[in-house]
Length: 281
Image 1 (cartoon, rainbow, N blue to C red):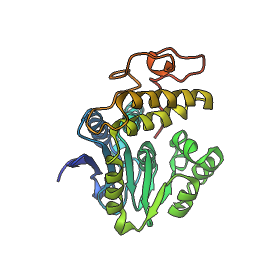
Image 2 (image 1 turned 180 degrees about the vertical axis):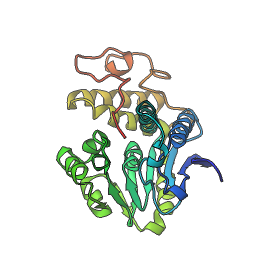
Image 3 (image 1 turned 135 degrees about the horizontal axis):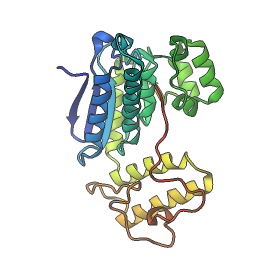
Image 4 (image 1 turned 180 degrees about the horizontal axis):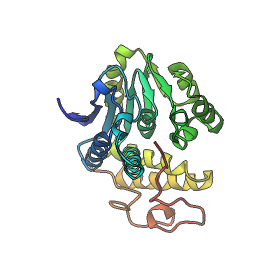
């Protein structure tokens, strides 16, 4: 099959596959554009409940395709970087749960793609490396520190060393390590479990965690309470109705005295519903 990114559907699970195995799935401009297009489509598809993101070949992603930049000026490189930022953000903002299934080398931009997902399941042959400073550029400075902490992120970026999968799991970068040959099967089982839950509660849980990470505990509890109120209004068991979007307000219930989040009335430190987590590379 052709194209830098493949998509197939298995019931309510969408499989997105990086498909440049001859280039070790290095991220180029076409892949950036296609990732953005694919995740925009999946986000708006009411039949999709879970997305699994994997790659063809022995490497998940070898980083940015440096060969692509030959002959281009600084303005082109800048536009190319912005395209990658847009791709990561579209993955990250997808309202459906997105699980990265990684194995082999995960380098630079590959790490950004994986960290843009909700969590990572890794084969036991996975390694991570963030060599951007040693290539004379800057990248992975935002998501990486938010996942593993500022000091660890600096150490990995400054040294460009390889981090094995056990260390990645210990730092919280990887949620689960499985035998590499079992990776796709474990991903399918995980997706089936997620898809069996009411989509409304899954979607609101994802939004509550993401929005809560941007504010203090008090406002986080308010976000969670608003999500609980929405589940109660729905009966808490709907498997078929498309969930509302708390960022836009579409499909939300009428304002209640306990629901500042959905009324659009925010306290002085309540997070904006339009905010997105930053990223680079």
